[in-house]
Amino acid sequence: MLRVLLFIYFFSLVLMARENPFFPVDNAQDIPLTSNQVTALPMLKRATLTLPSTARTLESVSVAYKNLDGSIAHKKILIRNAIDWHLPIFISQNINEANCEKDSSAKVKKHKKKADFKKIASLKFIAFYAKKNKLKIVTKDKLLRNFLVVKPHRIVCDFKRDTNIGSFVKSLGEDSIFIKLRIGTHKGYYRVVVELDGYYSYKLEHVSGGYMITLL
Image 1 (tube, rainbow, N blue to C red):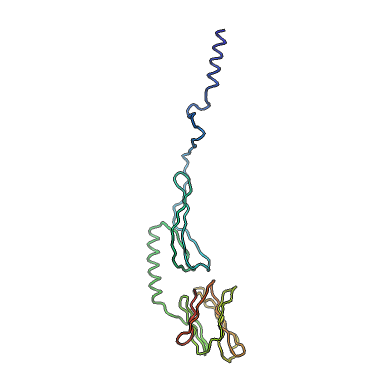
Image 2: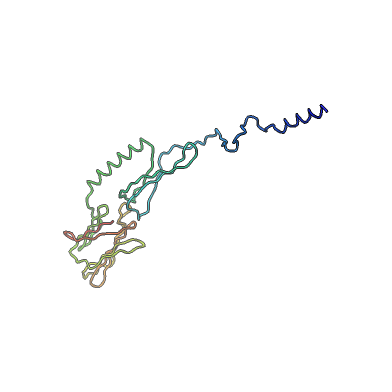
């Protein structure tokens, strides 16, 4: 009888034993398992974002980041500044690069202040001068109509004159937002087509010596 009682006692101790005696029992399922393995990520140098030609203002910037506990959070700042879609937007933490960007930006601003209208094409009765987003058309001929055509974006201007110059085409280069100029003659007028490098609206004004087109 004593042997039976001892057997039952030791058997009950075996049933109550845990697989891992070093792991706590209470709320064990609620304690996350952690690892000392660290994923090495490269330090941020520069990230570049290029916007489409329809972009005109930068409204806000939103950043998603990971915290120490692995959770993902977001931070958003309002910007609301006009932008030039030709230029990329940078995210950087490189101090030396940031200083270089400041120096480069200062040089560009200084250069822009000195920039003036540059003649890009001319015929006997009309000449074209470009400066950033402005195109000055110097002519004594009357402007009959002007309108915008898409795919590709181009501005069409018809001027009154009886002439027969045939067809005139000039490519203006990749550094200009006015990339191609075409002139063709019709009965009683000639047509000027200015092809653009992206999507724009425009404003046309009568100025001294001709007309001014400003891209918006």
